[in-house]
Amino acid sequence: MRRPLPLPPNQPGAAPEPSGAGIWTIDGDSLVTVERFDVGPAIVLLPTEEVLLLAVDLPIASARRRIEALPFAIEDRVAQPIGEVHAALGAGLGGQTYLAGIVARDRMARRAALLADAGWARAALVPDVLAVPVPPPGMWSIDIAKARALVRVEDGTGFAIPVAHLAAAWAAAGRPQLLSYGDSVPGDLPAEPAAYQEPSLAARLAQPALDLRQGAFAAPHRPVSPLWRRIATVAALGAFAHAAIAGVDTLAVQRIAAARASEMRGLVQQIAPDAVIGADVAASAAEILPAGGAGPSGFLPLFARVGGALKPLGGAIRMHAISYDAGAGTMSIEVEAATIEGLQQVGTALSGAGLSAQAGAASQSDGKAVGAFLIRGAA
Image 1 (cartoon, helix red, strand yellow):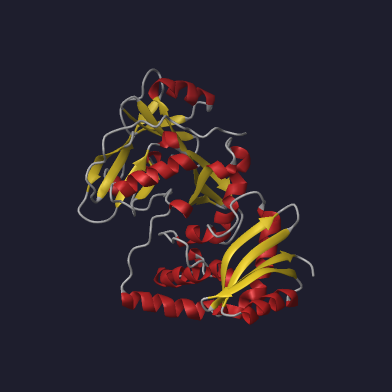
Image 2: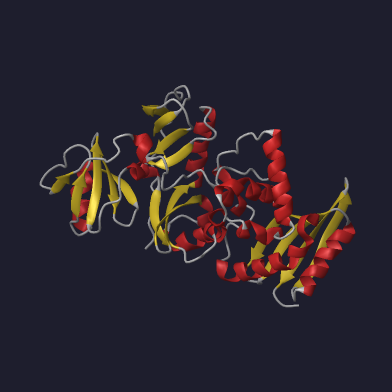
């Protein structure tokens, strides 16, 4: 069933309050303090009315490919065209199911701009219902404040609703048992009082289940010291000799220790040197992939074959762009090499892997050559 994205009206408000570490919430176009602490980045709570939270089945082992497949997995569950929404992937909910947050792209752009204007380019943006615990099966967790109810349901998703509509929503959901963490539940709704194990929001959101700052809206990476930059570069060069474009997958965050995150960042920077890479490296990497129009069923196998074919070329090439035409079953890539001969090696490698690679326009200037290839699955 398609569900419309919640889109409350954009309300002009006062200028944001001064920046600082802590937890803040968005009120109209203003930022309001919720909880302050001395160190660490700001966490900004987005009203859940602006987000559609879904539990999405993604039976894919690779973190990168889950991000890539997410738009196609939600397409039939969102009323807006997929190109008009921002989809962010969150924590696992058990098995092969993951939390996802969907926000209208223009609204997400306004929220990202609000954070940038406040000086919080690196702040996390988290739906406020995620501060409420996931309830046991057959129950709802509810936190009521100021005639507004935050509701967390057993599958890990949640929603916000005016208290006046809570009884109707509860009845429509089959009258689940209620755990009440906030103000009293109105009317005759049966609720069991509950208390947060961690009263502090900072403790409850230390590892939020979802940060909407991903992909095109990812927080910019922090400045890196020259020594750390050199370590990352050396590690990435070594990894690239074994990976090429498929290496982003083989170096997926879930497969490496935290100490090697800089290695993956360096690899992504080689593949897409002009890309802005945020704190979520995998989500940033996904931005160089096609964003819509083609399901993963045809794209992924061909992409894997292209990656395998170019793997031996290592750091001799850089991938600038990838697009996929589902109707024609073709992939277009734009590659940079040092010379025209380097581009010819790309064509030879693709053909040697049994792919049909038609060379397109090529140019050479400033010590580099850039060429396009149209690739089909069979030579």
